Length: 88
Image (tube, rainbow, N blue to C red; front, side, top):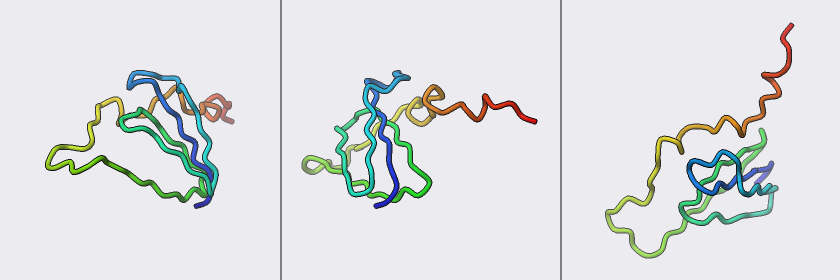
């Protein structure tokens, strides 16, 4: 691993402000509970592993559910400093 991963955890799918922010440096780890709404931000040099665990055999049922909101970025979380700078 290298770089940094910043994990933003949300109370629910409609939340625009994270209820927790965790900065994970190279060599550290974190665990997110199942079905917890989150977003990650990576430094340019970030390289990391993600592991998924499940309890027992899931058979043929779907393991992942997603919604339209989960597949779109939440604009309030992005740094808008570049947009605020005047152009010459």
